[in-house]
Length: 390
Image (tube, rainbow, N blue to C red):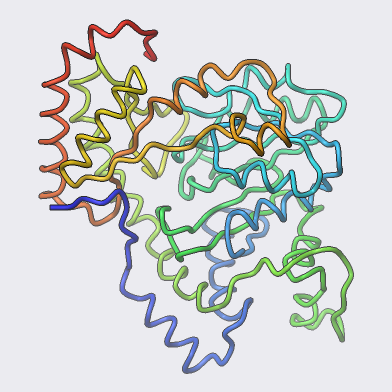
């Protein structure tokens, strides 16, 4: 039996809605009937001012960089332990990402290190909600207010997650989501930008539509549309939106099933707390079970585990190579302080299979293989001469 790391879930209505687009709606390009359905759904679900679909979370982040007017030399504080798009969106505008270290418990940006990284050139903070677990948004927003900074939430992994009851992506000035096939709710490729600051609402529509006021034209607010701002084609086709709408309708169902799997992993792995580290979610947060990971004490232990699981046809990949250690990161970004936790976590974190249709038989095989490996290597792990992660 081969157990993959991820299998995109199909609800069953995707093709019905896509067929409706083709047969009855007569509009395949962006901002059609199903795009509007997705916008309305997200605005109601998240209780946000405006939600706009994009063709990726990368596009949403690029839009955010334009909206907050990043100029050459502006600095943007963010973690290095994130996907390249988080930094690249701001580098494209001439900005300089400034990396600070992450917390050892949540793997999120360490809010206590942000203030020391602020300079007269700092324009914004970009918290990344790793694995769908919230950053400390109270502290981050307080710092932003005190220094007159903007906050762009990278909530790519966090649809349905909350911080003190408020949806992630709706706390900062702007939020960015992903619907890539590895996420909980998917459309193959896709994303959304959520506008929480009124001053960006109208301009977001212009930027998303190649810098034109096309959206106002179709609402009858202007008699013709024209080029009025910079922008690009950031919107997806309505076929993609139709697929996504079926997924959005099932958001709670999808997240609930994933939480069941997440909890099953967590309860099973408690018995190995002396040799591995399990995920942590603070009491004031609720997460969407986007990911289940474990951390070993050394890179070699992780490599041995990945190889053992691969020999048993089970995919357990590690995650990000820190951006600060990449060629582009060294060229376009800078580091504030040391990256001790980032380096340690990136070297020792491994992700376990997590998808909606992970069944009882597959979970039994996973537990059996993990248990066999842990029991066989427990003494060796405990005798390792290294700095503990936990």
